[in-house]
Image 1: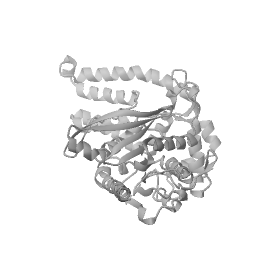
Image 2: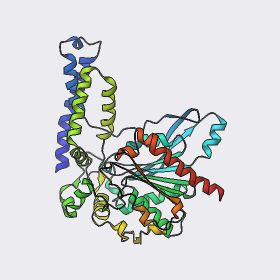
Image 3: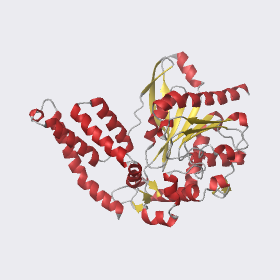
Image 4: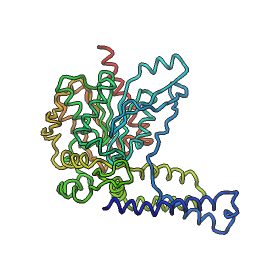
Length: 419
């Protein structure tokens, strides 16, 4: 019922948002006589703020068409390498007209970025991808909004997530691959590689795990506490809803994106209120740079997706309530997850000093589990002054974190070349 109420609210706010947007343009367009009215700028600012508060935020584009690398401009083409019902494996293909540059790029490492399936779209990692493209061939998991997946495509559980990662690794080729997982997927990625290792399959050259809940018992945050203070039955009864008839996934049970978004905002309501007020003031002052930065951030932050109910509940129970991975008790499709079986893959863990989503020590716990990896092929980094998003996006990611990730990957690539 809650989903239907949300849709009803959206149907009312949508037209009002369009009206507010049109009115804001009418009051600011220099060719419009209305822009000369007294107080036009103040009214336009209010209408634009109303528009942005009421509009529907669709999935953003990655929008990566070119990068600067090897001293020149490199063209980027985004392709779907593998299409699954709940995820598209995307490749960002680089092109150059310079023969020397082409040869250099052929030798560069291949990276699979495993994006979170936790409410936001994979485009949240746009800066991660753009930076990696300077020196790597890059793939990313682009998860599909569950409300867009027909019921005929079946359910999607945490076990299926693990199976997807295994399939993507095999598709790209483990012997040439470096996997980077950000936040939530550190757990299923570690499970996937553990299972592959235990079967005797090739595993990626390296695993880089950033800000993820490998062991949420270490330094729990408010996010962890929310998942543990209520029984699983509470989540089933209060946050799981059915997709309404106006979507391809009608009838599918999901954890709606709008509820996840409300949770994000509730974590720091004062900061968001202040941000919107500052946006209004920037419009009044004519500070278009700061206003544009606000639009860019919230176009991404407010764009959310629905998660399959089975996957969401599995994650709550397996990762945050029963801690099956660090306790050594997790079975995926009947196979025990044993991280100590990993021997071929190097391991780098990265944590933000100020991370309020995955606390310090939660990602580092992977080292206690991956005892089969030699100590000289494991490393742990704590990024001073970085919050959760700062370890994979923004200036600190580009200038502090990325150089360390790049050098770790290069080191593992060189070891293989020597062999």
